[in-house]
Image (tube, rainbow, N blue to C red; front, top):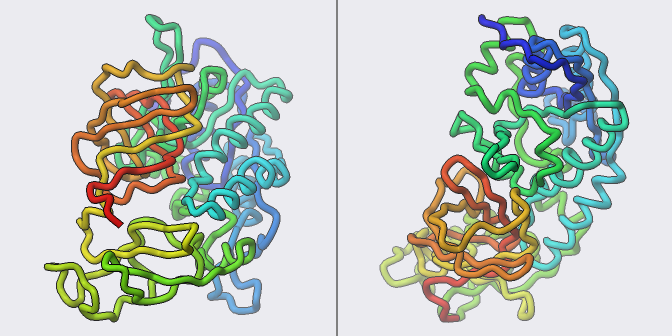
Amino acid sequence: MTAPAASPTKQRIVVGLSGGVDSAVTAYLLRQQGHEVLGIFMKNWEDDDQPAGADGDPSTPGYCTSNEDFVDAAAVADVLGIEIEHVNFAADYKDRVFAEFLREYQAGRTPNPDILCNAEIKFKAFLDHAMRLGADAIATGHYARVRHNPRSARYELLKGLDPSKDQSYFLHRLNQAQLSKTLFPVGELHKSEVRRIADEIGLPNARKKDSTGICFIGERPFREFLNRYIAMAPGPIKNPKGHTIGQHVGLSFYTLGQRQGLGIGGLKARGAQKGGGEHAPWFVARKDMQANTLWVVQGHDHPWLLSKHLSAMDASWVAGHAPQSTAALAAKTRYRQSDSACAIASTAGAEFALDFAAAQWAVTPGQSAVLYDGEVCLGGGVIASVSALDSAM
């Protein structure tokens, strides 16, 4: 393996070591470039930090395995010969991320706490802590890239080179000050290469499974977790004809486009959409908070699930200002979605509206609409409302 070229200027770089292979290889690459590297393990959640088998059954999965992750991160630090510090950001997380997470669900929206965590914890609280340690920059194992554009004199957030792992969607709220102090070394690599490097240098977590989901929810059923903080409020489930075909447990526990867990999968054609078939699956299409009613439709491409226009709020632009409305752009309305051609219909303060060339499926208030100009992530905002192709109720 060819080692990365040495950096012309040795820097003190604080790496967020999560216990996973991506951040471990990040630290290794920076060490190979000749930088002084210090690892920080961030603990963001206190409750239910139980390891697998905590109930006496070794087959029972744990919920949030931060203790196990710290052991893995410490083992990586030992192999690489770097110091590691354990820092508790749980109070910041509850105040800045989790409180907003609950407010959004209570309002009937579906938030993305990973985006807020990046903006408020990993690239704010963690960045501030690293600067107090005398760091020149921080680095994480995210699959994204940072580039300084000499023409605009601004930093740009780019997609990671591995299209299957690109995480720029989750990082779109980062600003110029944050990007100027941030490095994403594995953003220049494909995941297979990261695994190969980890294997070659003998990292103890080289084959560790990638983490998925939100740590504080972990492996438990999402509804079970949310019910600890939001009371169930049952109400009717109705089809487009207005027929009640079931009962929901509370609108906060459902998201647009949801197919599983509706409790109506065995119903036949009672009120089914024409052409939908007796056993066509049901999808959540709308949530009426005032009437406490969940509206469902049959068929993946029902008009209630399709939209070509959205409005967004709480906009955050990487360059510090909105893109030109005349630009030919693309956007994602959820992670792991292909870029879709769109145009900015309007901008006003922290709000903007988008028009899409093709209909988008199950665009969900609370999620983020993130704009791109090719490989450059421009920023985005929280989806506030959507105009379905068929707005009839």
